[in-house]
Image 1 (cartoon, rainbow, N blue to C red):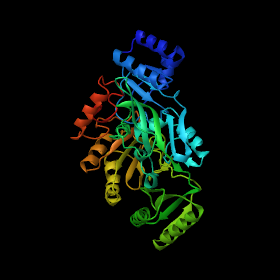
Image 2: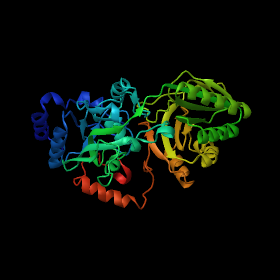
Image 3: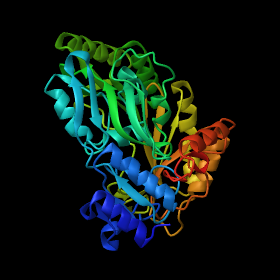
Image 4: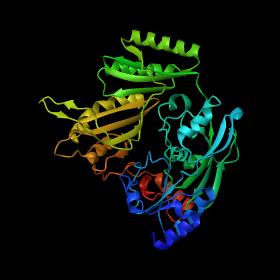
Length: 436
């Protein structure tokens, strides 16, 4: 329980200027889940550990936070938790351009980290908001469409420094690409939403920055033929990203190219020739990266849409779902989405599948008097064998279905791991699968 004595100890430990308990300021930090009871800003790994130990002694739940770009992801956060901000841990610890390895504190923003790498012609090939923090990327396992060429974040993390729920600082992995010191425990924390430990430092394997980068848009009159063209191109060409939009009439997709100038020209020629044979068209968008943001920070609206009766509506984003899908299965899934969404009361849907197989679906409320039923849609998808995760929903959209799906046998092991690393259960309780 967060008491005045607890806050006083916290202020004495970190300095009063690094502890925020003003109710009006905390309102601005409220997510769709809950409002924190206080915010603290430790300035080192040791201070993070001290805060966690203090919170454990007082039974105060801790809500780790970075750039606030994915705070709505996961289950309900506890009301009145201590938000632990890593924004003061924002330094580059070590950078060896010759080894393509860099270590930085978890509070460093993605864009600042990338700027430091760009000076040496290198990059961390992820798709993420500029102000997302490195620790947040690790906690959410955020990779994006460029996983097609570069792999996922799990392939790029070499080592981590983590504060577990017992307040103990642990280091796992290392600062070299070849590391055979034992189990790759660093992989355990990736995507765990801060429920097993708070990442304070991370070491990444980097890539050379591409000499040229472009995004080509492919359009075809028929979705089926256009999608098959995409599957063929993504399977045989060294594309950086391949994203098919749906529902799209005509079919629309974006392909990312990252290569040397000669290879870029060759790939573009192959794309144009393949598209021409399939009756499709290719045009350059002018962008360098395929944009597919998975975690909208706020609800947004589509532009005004005219209904058959003449009424004009601006549908509001109600929820976002995501799931892994094999391209071979996606067409069947998409054919059912329209009907299932309509039956659940959603007016519109849109989304994308990025290769090798990850779906992100946005659902829009049509502004009618009857609210759409997100529970009904999620249940219907899961009954069909679609492992849908509710990655975001508006505060006005109720949900009783588990965010990450029904329990599975392996979740019992995850509970035991949680108990071992966070014995008092204070790190982000309730946010991960099975209420962990």
